[in-house]
Length: 455
Image 1 (tube, one colour):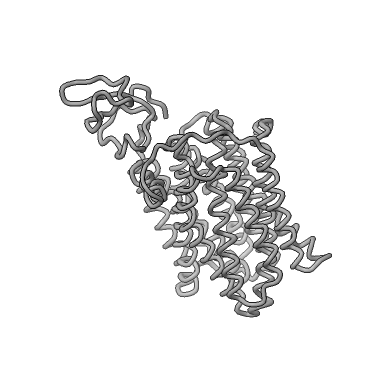
Image 2 (cartoon, one colour):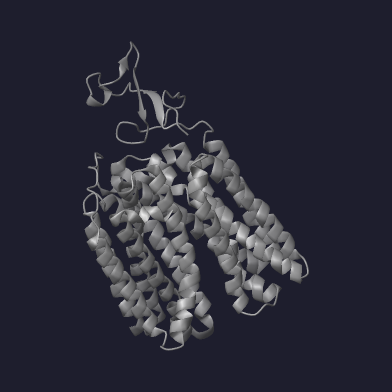
């Protein structure tokens, strides 16, 4: 899998992603300590609000950034966002009021909402071969999982020698290093965008692309299934470990580590697996595994805590990580094959925004349900959401889902350049090509066949 790092441009971009993730991880730890300093026992409320602000920024800003991606060179956009994030991180140690945290977090996450989809849209152009791109997706998944394990450990080590304010300096360095690596990378020239209309039309194109493309609607349902299971992990683990099992605080890291380990092992296996079977054949069974695991979690949380139920919870968290990774890792491939090259920034921006809207729903739901009804009921309800969305994805994503579709163009004149290879009959002009939603194809063919079927 590391062979993809031989590509110099990708190597620089991947390294930029890694150092930025480490910087973000350090900021997460430092922000928690800053919140406690300013709010004391109300620190959880401050962090919860900051998390909500983060998700709102992701959902609102990403489509706008996607609309601007064809007006601003990608290198300029990504470097500008890195510098913005570095500036915000450098300012955080001087915060004296809680409201200042909220403003700076919004600026930080708004910059991330512009940077990340642009970065994601650039990778398939840097690595046009599907095999290489699949390896890059797996490495990206590994980077996120390793960051969740490595950054807290690095922060703990640094805090033995310096105050938490210096962690923000590490965050700043991470973003500056990311900017330097992006500057040093030779990025491919993006394809020209043929869409017309104002900024609103461009900002909403990615969302319209999702609603019009069956496999992308299915991907959104699968994202909600992952968010339902992931919310249990990220919101309720601390309550499960310390309140239900009465385990020491250090076991919280062990439990989250089990989730990360499951995710990483699956990400490592993805390139070989996806070389043999389709994305759909991997993602749908993994989505159906999530409600089964959550049902087991509900049963374990309802039992009297014991040694075997503790180990079973660790296994369940590893299984959630594995199933989630099996859904999330191929997601980039699904987006890539569903959009024209010029529309990849808009498509990835929509993916970023819509997937985070799923988390914006499930995060508070997991917290409120656990506080009001208990963990078993929470796991059952979130498991039901995962089951319903997995079924919806199965019904939405056709089992036969070729790239090339035969389709008619009754809306275009016979001499239109797009119809140069079309077969004209008395009632329609039909041809076949890799079908995506764009200015010439505004809806998905209701009944289609394929001359060049490829799963």
